Image (cartoon, rainbow, N blue to C red; front, side, top):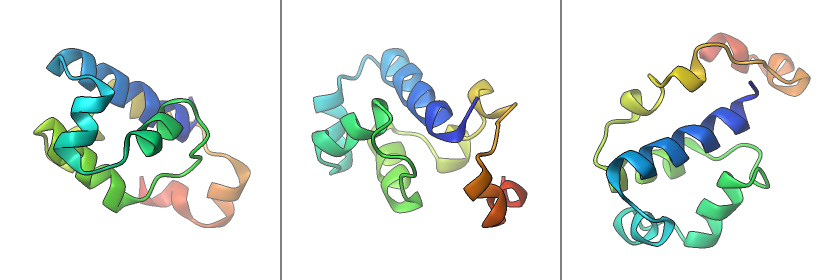
Length: 90
């Protein structure tokens, strides 16, 4: 699974588990709903850590808890991530 897909799936799962709509997440995190939708539908290829941290805050979880989801267990790295050394950071 590619990283952008893993992020989208994890957000979807957490919203479902918390009973939280995208609009509620937007309100609780301060992240505009259009940004959340872009992340969810893959238009946002690489959401920043500040955005993810704010979303985690809106979900009531720590950032490290976000990345402990099964979605991140077997990531496939795109070529540009490998070139930027991002595969080593995960």
